[in-house]
Every structure is written in C-alpha cells, then in structure tokens.
Length: 65
Image (cartoon, rainbow, N blue to C red; front, side, top):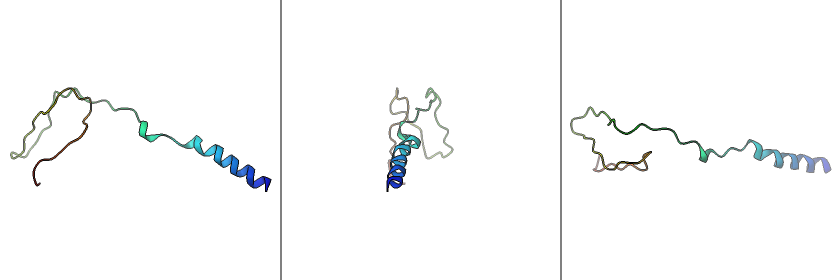
C-alpha cells in the first residue's frame, strides 16, 4: 500500500513539470502595413478600414458569398 501511495505522489508531483501553457506564446512580428494584398479577381477590391493595429483582431466578409 505504501508503494502505491509513493508512486501516486510521484506521478502527481511530476505531471505538472511537462505541462506547458500554450496560450501564452510570443506575439509574431508583422509588417509595417504599407503593402496591400494583391487580388487577381477584378470583382474584388481591397479597402483600408483602420490604421494603427499591430495584428488583425477580427475579419468579416460582407455579402452572401
């Protein structure tokens, strides 16, 4: 019984050592934002909505398609 208890304590103590917080990854660097994307479809257009954001926050597509 003591052996089982010691093994369980060892497992519970050693388990958090290999656990990493993946939600706190480093922020990747982004470009200056001066270059707009290239679109090959003449029916689509690129329009600047806001300036000053480091990374995109959300994106919405307007229209049925």
